[in-house]
Length: 307
Image (cartoon, rainbow, N blue to C red; front, side, top):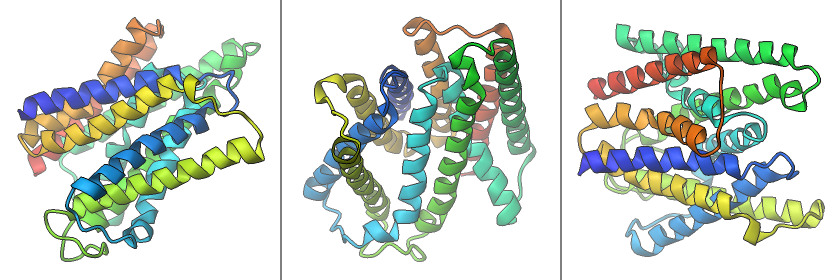
């Protein structure tokens, strides 16, 4: 079953990227905030389900305790949604998914952990691919100075890079909270529940942020929030949450194979964006994406081997 769950995780997260892009209309002023609102609401529903049926004996103070991690993840996702207003999924998704390389580098620099040759090679491939994608995007901007898309293209390219940085910080902080039940600052948790408690804390925080964003858009900015027009954002939020649920079961089975499979979900994003959104990149851009994906898969494999 672990293989089925890993495959479903790939499909769910790859599909989420597709719907994130469809909901990120450049003509909608606050499309990135609309997406965050819908994701927050869906995650909130899942959190309340866990509180009622999950038997985790949740202590509400964990919301504040886990806030540094939740904040990093929420900021990274909202930044990513903004970048999709102007950037192709074929570029955005692989770049965002390189946070694992940054986490490995941070552990090496700040925690003194060693890095094997395979991990180092993965980091180099990811870094090279991102550098080439940024270089190519910069060149496209120079060649198309009058086109609005390209006038903001390089700035938009920096959004998934920032996503990667904040997401990596969230993962880095997560290691402190979830590495060991004996040292976790989360309260009223057990070996069986402390990961669920962390996830519920994150989802409840995202739900509260969604409520605040809705008030900001409708009350302060006096913009209408049409729930009937949020179909793509709703689908993205549902796929995101489903993927997270499948991921837990995939990794609990055969992590050595599941990890690189899940890490490669951006391949699904690229394929769907090409087939459904009709995105077209130049050959050199596809080559750079392939380099990034090779690095991500290698990192996932090295992580699984280390466990």
